[in-house]
Amino acid sequence: MTLNFELSDEQKMLEDTVWRWASTWLEPQMEKLYEEDRMPPDIFRELGKIGVNGVAYEEKYGGAGLGYVETLLLYETIARVSNALSMTVGASQTLCFDNFRRNATEAQKMEILPKACSGEYIGCLGITEPNAGSDAMGMTTRAVKSGDHYVINGSKTFITNGPVADLMVFYAKTDPMRGAHGISAFYFLTEDMKGFYREKIHKWGMKSSPTGLLTFDNMEIPEENLIGGLNQGVSVLTNGLCTERITLSGCSLGSQRACLELSIKYAKERVQFGKPLGSFQFIQGKLADMYTGYMASKWMAYSAASYCDSLETKIGGKGTELDRKAAAALLFCGEMGTKIADAAVQIHGGYGYCSEYPVSRHYLDQKLWDVGAGTAEIRRIIIARELLRDNFQSGR
Ligand SMILES: Cc1cc2nc3c(=O)[nH]c(=O)nc-3n(C[C@H](O)[C@H](O)[C@H](O)COP(=O)(O)OP(=O)(O)OC[C@H]3O[C@@H](n4cnc5c(N)ncnc54)[C@H](O)[C@@H]3O)c2cc1C
Image (cartoon, rainbow, N blue to C red; front, side, top):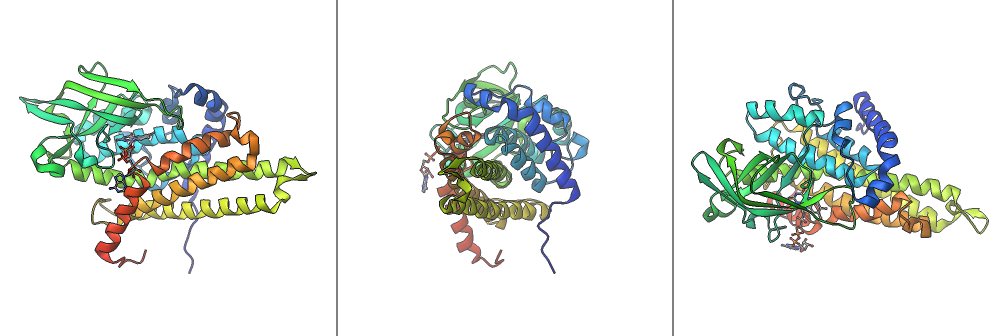
């Protein structure tokens, strides 16, 4: 008996299509986009043309009707060219619109999701606040019911796609006395929204992926824009974080693969002491470690995605195996990604320190995966909590 670790023909076709697009459309622009910290405005329309803006969404909404394994594969493939823009695609497709898909009404989904799939709408998700990061349940953004609408006050920070998003899903306290059980999820269309302000945050990595500080000042949204049930925001949030951690592992994975491929090529081409770098054992050791790290990361991420796809409900959060697997996948990919990118720069020597060489971007971008989607420390806390709860009975 064998365990099948191979992609299916359909998955290979998805990978080939996305890679053709990423290497011909995105790659030639990437150095300039990064330098100018600019997202290509038509990127989602472009992805809409190749049908990958809603990989896990049902076909009736314009999606591809596939799953989280294929979503992970999409993000991995884009990240071979740009970790940052893969994150931007993931923030829209998984964090925002997939969360919306799993919690909105059928009528809301029919109205919104086709536009997400075509690339007309870009999405963002707001959990983090200036004073509530790891302690997300300590959020203070308030939603107060007034007649047939909610009045929102507060702010969200570090929001990927915040400066450009057409639709935002966010969390606010609807019953602060109930703590974590007084949080609800909402969405709104940003165009011409009164009382909604956005500011771009300047970062040293993940450039070209826009990040924003978003402020709500007596912003009014209709009561129907509450999704997932009143005071049910915690389960929406924790479920969403599981699929987010699993699929966004692909950003680190693709970047790891690019670092390895670029380093192998460079080690063969660059000659010092009359020999290619690849003939030196120090360099060979680095390549071997990079390969081993990438393959291990890949197994962590794809096995978690496959496990998620095997669950009928795909319910994650506290007390589930999915929570542990999702946290472990991103923990491992993130930490391995920073090591692999560091080795890639080292193999490239001084050239690796120059923006003309893509390994420099991968190096800057990879660090985010120790921080974003819940930090490495928080992921360790989740993994340990779940291990101590169920004594690792599944053995997987
Ligand atoms: C580029 C970028 C994109 C992002 N995109 C989004 C997005 O789209 N939407 C969104 O909502 N958020 C987003 N984030 C926010 C991200 O999820 C948070 O930065 C992260 O959760 C950490 O929160 P914090 O920055 O407030 O750090 P803090 O919570 O202040 O943590 C600081 C340090 O203390 C450690 N720490 C905190 N509590 C504990 C503890 N109990 N035990 C041990 N160590 C602890 C942390 O691990 C970290 O090392 C993004 C961040 C960045 C940088």
